[in-house]
Image (cartoon, rainbow, N blue to C red; front, side, top):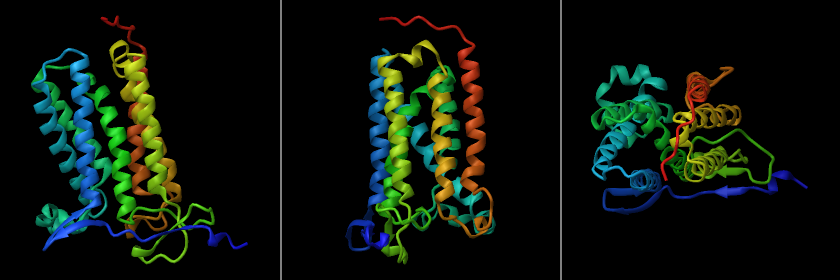
Length: 270
């Protein structure tokens, strides 16, 4: 039996609906869902730990703006620097697309530092708790990539291969968007267990953030091996840009874990 008879013929219109020249795309909706769910999770943590709800306003603005700015600048500077450095105005043209998860991570780290400074909170407090929204949000964004028929993998004969019709593909490809989304959801479940069942964020500050960096970027690193290159300059590279950018985050996670486990366990107030 021809293995290619078993596949998913993927031909989803990325536009959810349109009114005249205005288009609402699934990708944008999933980014909105990412921020919405993230804010709900963060508000729940603030209430659970007895902090003032006013903190929510600043985390919304610092977190949302820094993530979007970082994601856009990350794509422009990591993947297409020659074009955007000579056409800087096009950086503002979000309709062209182009958001990089590593840039979003860097932007969010800066935004959280500003949030922590403004609210006089330990930086590690913010880093531990943002892991929950980011893990589940990463899954939503990858589903958005799936609906856009972008960032998929190499050819496969596996029965769950996707033929991305709208991108001109004629053979089944690895749906790496789904692989990443499932990996991020598993990481989210682990972090939820650590926070709500084991009070890890309260007992050992830094442990959640350290494991988050290691697990998420390790998953990203290995899945990249079966992805197609996103940009022309990646063709022929032994490691893609996404993998190269993941290595510092993994090493940072290891360093944070070593630092966290050297600290004494803190008592938890019930």
